[in-house]
Length: 199
Image (cartoon, rainbow, N blue to C red; front, side, top):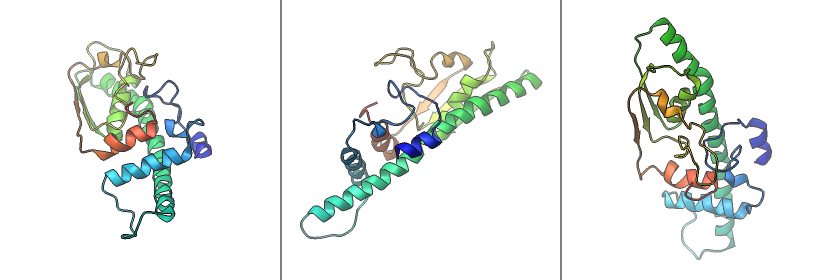
């Protein structure tokens, strides 16, 4: 998994941890059994049944749960890569596209809305547009954004700044953030991916 991450990795950090070029679940100090068990527990909490049924829990059940956790860890690693790429597309694709449109249409009013990875994409577009007053971006709405809540933070609890520190000034209007405690992808699996519990 570490080899896969380094081969396809994108250098894009939200501020989840001090060094988050890769998810915390790949930390060399972390026991793989612990990471896989955490993902298996997350699947069980989300209502996934691993099958079998009946009988006492034994070594076979433990191995089965560990295997399901390992598969989920690999799936979540691909999620991490796609999350990072969404930020790159926002900053290097959508941001410059907004600049080109506002050059051609100076009165253009842009309203950005994104869900999940799309929320990260439209947020990182703010890092890709030039500073102007007023900004052509009149509002940003993030629906269950699949990235760190620290992205816009100036002073992170563990030092440094979030990747979008200072970029709120590039919105000439409101930033609205919607989230749900029922979103298991963000409330259960995102913290397990990052590896920092509540981060």
